[in-house]
Image (cartoon, rainbow, N blue to C red; front, side, top):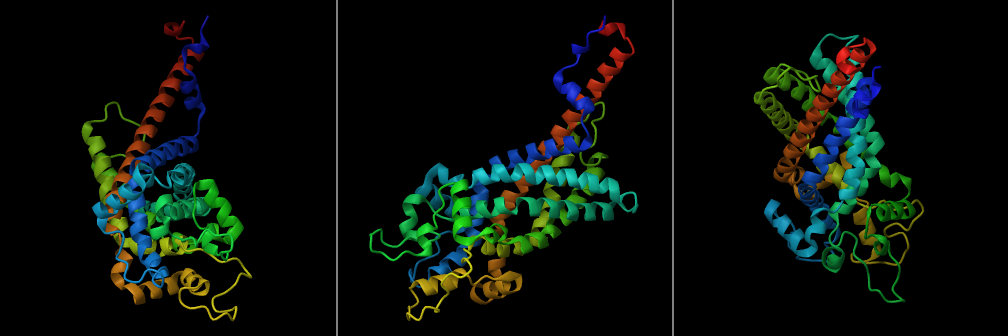
Length: 385
């Protein structure tokens, strides 16, 4: 009598699972691991990108205030001094919630698109290019609200330091103080940010920066075709390929090299759109019908609510945001935090791809072992008796 329980539950699942399920699981694990490992660098990069907009917003109230964040080490020391370890991992919740569906959707759609498009076009690079665009658009639209929340949380300062340099500073806490938008501007958690954004700004706030994010699909359109080409050159295998009998150490070095080179190329070519997207995401969107700057006839000066609200809404659309940043801060602002971004993005991409490739390798190996055992049982192999 043959015992069907010779195979493990994981092997039985892997034997029946589809390639899409493998890609979704491996992508989610890769994105999650990458998010946890590189969260502090993501916080630093976001603060450097958003700083120009924040300092201009507070110019009337903080005349002569020096730039708060300067470089990787300087920004890290300020965050650590004012907020501690918690500040270094601010926004980790949205990262975890965001990376799981982002990479699960991306790898699933990417590989399905490659299968479909290869039926109509034989050029591998063209197929990979358009598959990247389709996958990137799908994952961006699905997860944009999560990334807006993440950017808001990361770009604000600590709870105890908000009186000095908060994203949206509060007025005096007296019963007679006039309510302002800024009183509701501090976000304590992922769900607190989502609630406040919805109640004060509406559903559109969650899709701030969606257009530049979609334009940023040029990033993945460069990165992943380059990665697949380089990995094939270095290892002789495509992305997520089944393992051979014995993958040498050079196989993993090839994956590492392909990850680093493809990410550097993509980041260098498309970085300015990230700055524009960050500025659009970190500003608050006034609700329809709310009081506009100068519209109440009260003659408020530059430190009043009208001026603050005018500064808050100065970024409108990609073209206007580009012109505003160029006029106020110069072309260097489009590369603010790029060094830190490279130090974050390259390790993030490397961890993501190494984890993805490792998980796919293990899943494919488990699938082959599970199917071998099942076939042996079905054929009455005496070794399984």
